[in-house]
Length: 547
Ligand SMILES: Cc1cc2nc3c(=O)[nH]c(=O)nc-3n(C[C@H](O)[C@H](O)[C@H](O)COP(=O)(O)OP(=O)(O)OC[C@H]3O[C@@H](n4cnc5c(N)ncnc54)[C@H](O)[C@@H]3O)c2cc1C
Image (tube, rainbow, N blue to C red; front, side, top):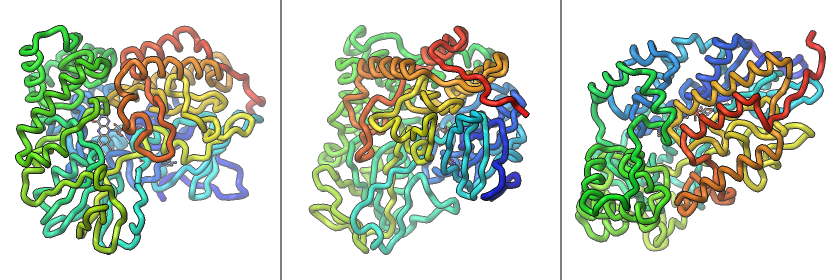
């Protein structure tokens, strides 16, 4: 453990203004704004041995962002943007991790960060309006504000196959990859899962491994990323109008920085539609293919079918073995987080790569020698779980939160997770969740900035009005959930099982978990709340006279 001095049982908790949980994009930003801009006494905690969150843990081969990096970074400091040099359009994990470490140094954040320390519980003490926060090192902290940046995609989803402990080879999860790396040379590798991490790790491991077996549950609509250098003209255009570029990002649906289409797929001829798909297929990028081609792929069946037909034809043209091509061709709608990866489908043309469809031939058990499905046994030296995350709520619910009246967050969310504005939940005052449930479905760093500005304004509002706490009223939260449901149900996303609606984790409520109207509309809702003095929020006066 590193960081400031701690206290132990029997000692009064350390008094702070705020505790920040997590030191990824969200937590580092929260610490910077609350400590350096608002002048609060803040400490941040992370259970990882280094800062960076996602980009610390996901050091598997092939890990990259799929947002163009000119929008996958902070914008609040123009000099940071101008002086940091990215080498690629979609940077690899080490480069993003280096950037976040640079951020920690640049704003002198490390002195307020305690690493390798997990927050176990947070209990709201109504007598004093403070959160009592307990760490796994036994430290106790009393803080007025709790800011959680615990990660949308951070709590690993590790299916428990019978016999797993008997396997004599190595087992890895992509999001808990050994920091020292590992070699696949001469090894028989099995990858379970073909989501975003799966397509990346499969494509990277295949050329190195002796043999690779991919166990696929869901075929994917993956499009090329077209990795390469950042377009110099594009970068120059951002520098020429920095404010304009970021305003465009913040007012867009996806926050990805490209021009989103306003044309429905049915508004153009078949030939024009094909040409537009081809143009964006060659340009690269998953969100670009879904949102820059046409305006209605996520909401309209005709548009969705047009996109899937195009991708299916590309799969058929690329994959030489017809049976493998059939297995790789999705049959559901194109309504998950869109994937992109260069060379993914081409990988299956390699002699050393085999594909197993675990829907028709399920994994029965893991044996000492490898993986046994209903029909066959696969001898392996390494098994890679690319099985993703218990997304959105996974890490939040691992912390034992107790709010007003002794209510546990797990009970408050027993049927489904609920928030107001994706940020706060009723009965849990002064607790702010960055990318909590019912937050925006967008590129994250610009949305983090929108959210932390709102949190900072809410704290300033409390300071100005002399109030002690803020939280949404229960009916305000219900109204936001109804809004999210209405918008979500008008899209095609709930019709497909994925982590977006919780369907990837057995036993998890399958429900709308995002505000799907886009970053621009989301930022507008936050602005409205602030400009109108927080309608639908409850405030309480100080519970005791400050000493
Ligand atoms: C391979 C990969 C590629 C991605 N690419 C993109 C992309 O291109 N664009 C995009 O928008 N998003 C992308 N994402 C999503 C990515 O997670 C976010 O963009 C962003 O990095 C999340 O930052 P965060 O600070 O919210 O959370 P995280 O980076 O997940 O950080 C949360 C941290 O909090 C720690 N933590 C959690 N609970 C506790 C606790 N109780 N006590 C102490 N510490 C705790 C976690 O261990 C973690 O270190 C990608 C994700 C992955 C896995």
